[in-house]
Length: 52
Image (tube, rainbow, N blue to C red; front, top):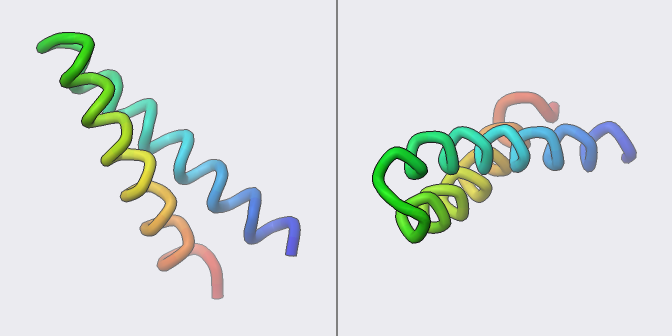
Protein backbone atom coordinates (compact mmCIF):
# COMPACT_ATOMS: atom_id res chain seq x y z
CA UNK A 1 0.00 0.00 0.00
CA UNK A 2 2.74 2.46 0.96
CA UNK A 3 4.80 1.53 -2.08
CA UNK A 4 1.96 2.35 -4.48
CA UNK A 5 1.47 5.77 -2.94
CA UNK A 6 5.20 6.44 -2.97
CA UNK A 7 5.47 5.47 -6.63
CA UNK A 8 2.60 7.82 -7.47
CA UNK A 9 4.17 10.62 -5.45
CA UNK A 10 7.55 10.12 -7.10
CA UNK A 11 6.03 10.04 -10.59
CA UNK A 12 4.02 13.19 -9.92
CA UNK A 13 7.06 15.00 -8.50
CA UNK A 14 9.30 14.00 -11.40
CA UNK A 15 6.67 14.91 -13.99
CA UNK A 16 6.04 18.28 -12.37
CA UNK A 17 9.74 19.06 -12.18
CA UNK A 18 10.25 18.18 -15.83
CA UNK A 19 7.25 20.28 -16.85
CA UNK A 20 8.50 23.23 -14.82
CA UNK A 21 11.99 22.92 -16.28
CA UNK A 22 10.67 22.90 -19.85
CA UNK A 23 8.18 25.72 -19.30
CA UNK A 24 10.56 27.95 -17.37
CA UNK A 25 12.43 28.75 -20.57
CA UNK A 26 9.29 30.46 -21.91
CA UNK A 27 7.74 32.13 -18.87
CA UNK A 28 6.27 31.66 -15.41
CA UNK A 29 2.70 30.93 -16.56
CA UNK A 30 3.88 28.43 -19.13
CA UNK A 31 5.96 26.76 -16.44
CA UNK A 32 2.92 26.55 -14.17
CA UNK A 33 0.70 25.01 -16.84
CA UNK A 34 3.33 22.52 -18.02
CA UNK A 35 4.13 21.61 -14.43
CA UNK A 36 0.47 20.80 -13.80
CA UNK A 37 0.26 18.70 -16.95
CA UNK A 38 3.55 16.99 -16.09
CA UNK A 39 2.32 16.19 -12.59
CA UNK A 40 -0.79 14.47 -13.87
CA UNK A 41 1.04 12.68 -16.63
CA UNK A 42 3.84 11.56 -14.31
CA UNK A 43 1.34 10.21 -11.78
CA UNK A 44 -0.57 8.35 -14.48
CA UNK A 45 2.50 6.82 -16.11
CA UNK A 46 4.05 5.79 -12.79
CA UNK A 47 0.86 4.07 -11.64
CA UNK A 48 0.25 2.49 -15.04
CA UNK A 49 3.71 1.04 -15.65
CA UNK A 50 5.27 0.56 -12.20
CA UNK A 51 2.39 -0.72 -10.07
CA UNK A 52 1.38 -4.30 -10.83
